[in-house]
Image (cartoon, rainbow, N blue to C red):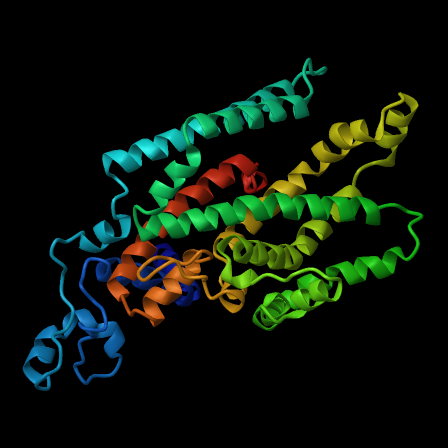
Length: 405
């Protein structure tokens, strides 16, 4: 009887969690496995799906090739099959990435950024001391100066151009990484400045400004529509050029120039995203005890000392998770980039555009070139890279630490 009760308990639990398990298997596990399989095939617009004239054909494709071969209409391309060589799609994506010249160029670029990494570690070590012998800004400035010097010595620009020509995979990822590396500091700087201003108790119209500054975040729910507005602003006959002409300056073809097009996409994304950081920082600022500032004022601390010694350390637990989350969403940005530039301006046939990020590249592979197998290989590599980056970010930010304590 006790054994029956034990089995009944197990079956009851399974009955409750079965819908979740089935949903995960169908909508998560199966797509991952099937996409991995597709990445090893030659599937594209010339090698279509196998059609067995059965319901749920898209799910049963791997099991109905023999039926397709028997019933295929004359003149129809043969269905997709395993590619030869098996890792051909991955090789095509990587291009010349692992050649001697490109690896040496990548090593040179890494050497250039080593001073920045060292300066960050030095600041982290010095931050644990009661009294810092060297200001943090001085260590950071020295790291930046050494990085610039090494960039000239190793000709970092030429090395980056060589890396960029090695293959589409690295190009679009480099675009996305640069995009994130520029956007996140701008988010933080603008959001921190506005949050500090809105946290002033005697600020006139503080409630109005708090509401007004959150509007871009609300507008991000219709990002495509708002991005079309940004595109109109920077068109050759758009609002920006009309304003420049009104004050006697010559306008530019903003969206046809690679550098300016990239800058326009960054400006639009900063406008969309800073309210998220601003609200997060504002909430963290209001949780800081006022007594700490009063004690610092008694000690004669300057405003900069307040900021670096009290404010930033105490709001860090709120900022780090926001940085991780925003980095992920910015890395996979699609709507804003696609609506404003479409990944362009183009730099030649078969070459990713100047603003072609990871998701834009993926979209084009599926809906324009219909290179499904190549896109599958791209998705597998990105899954591995982002999974590793997520694990590392969890370790650095310690977001989940409280759940296990």
